[in-house]
Length: 196
Image (cartoon, rainbow, N blue to C red; front, side, top):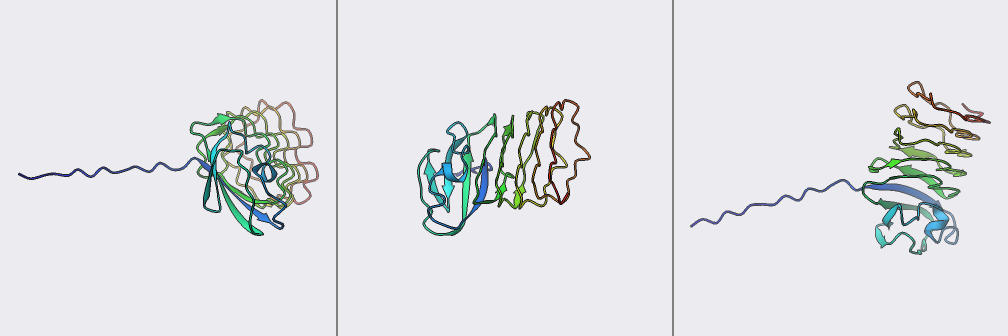
């Protein structure tokens, strides 16, 4: 009698996460999740974080960077997330890059998402859909950000974009496909974008 064994293949689903890199110049400059991104620590948004390969369960757990230099933080996002991304990395001075390529949710607002992230140099994989209605101050004072892939963003339902790129360092922006028929406020959208 032969015994047949059926191999069960485990399908690994791509993680629903946002990966950020921080350049910490002092071990006292970023000691909690609140310090490196004041709103991303919201329990509503996260189910945990992985910091330099160590997983922390619970969004509001305190931690300390043990060394200066670059640190990789993976924010594990709750499945099916469709809610605000407002002030996600608000005033995070040590933030240097963010990768959204493995983020499967949708943002209903990106108001102040990277507000005053003066050292942010790279944003990749960010996808804006017609769920988003507010991009106010999204890249305000992001002086180190010189380029941005935004050609496929769906801006059709955005009503507010005031100061979206004010004081930003971008040198070019492909917005040819943007349809902004519902826009009611674009005041100072590109104010002091001196390199654009």
